[in-house]
Picture 1: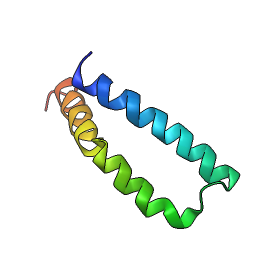
Picture 2: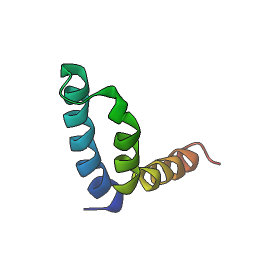
Picture 3: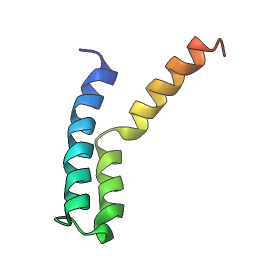
Length: 61
């Protein structure tokens, strides 16, 4: 499994779980900053970097 897929698997699961918790009220919106911090600690910035590099390559940049 490549780096992008590895990062996305965990991040996607976390996003889906937390979205449901925020919508249902199980997680207060006051915890949104912690949600973002957790995403960053899971490698979200690296995932964005990898996807941006792929997009740039596809667009010939």
